[in-house]
Structure formats: structure tokens, C-alpha cells
Image (cartoon, rainbow, N blue to C red; front, side):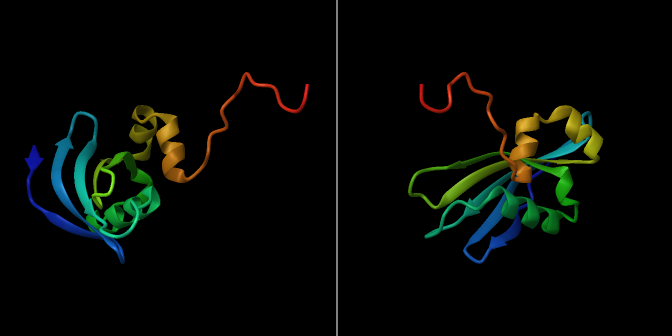
Length: 120
């Protein structure tokens, strides 16, 4: 089931988005959404801003949304955002990679390195 209605979303004072595509994936229990974000003269909106504004516009909890990708062409002021809105947190945690959940939560993963620290 696909929905082609265009819904406007206010992301910040300088950014506004339009939902271009919404697909209800009933097998997995999520909505797959594509948003075109216009942010002329300002930087790409943060993942936190995207999650907050989409949650408010769709009437869902913020912890059920995962931003999969934000793609911005250099100098264009337009970004394409792909995100998933899940029906439950359990399904989200089973399907989405942990690094994406950490990214959306704003936590950094410390990479284990093979490098040496300090002077030799």
C-alpha cells in the first residue's frame, strides 16, 4: 500500500520538508517514508530535528523513528531523507542496525583500534 499525498513538515525556522512517498510495509510492521527537505541558506537539519518534527507531524513516538539516510547535494540546499517509522520498539531493535540507533540517539561508538597510543 503506497500513499502519494504530500504532507508538509516544519523542521526548523529555516527548514521545511515535504513527504514525497509513504509505504506501509505490513510484513515488517513499519512505514517507509521519503522526505524532501528544503533548507536554503542553512545547513542540513540534524537527525534529532528530523525525528522530532516527523514524530510531531505523524503523531508517533520519537523512539519509533529511525533516520536511514540523509543525502544532500553540495550547495543545493535540498536534502532527501529516508526514514522508517515502526509500530513497536521491539521490531525496530530486531531489524535496524545498532550503529543507526546509536546515531539517532546522538551517542558515538568508540571504534576499537589496532593503533598504538602514546609515544614509542
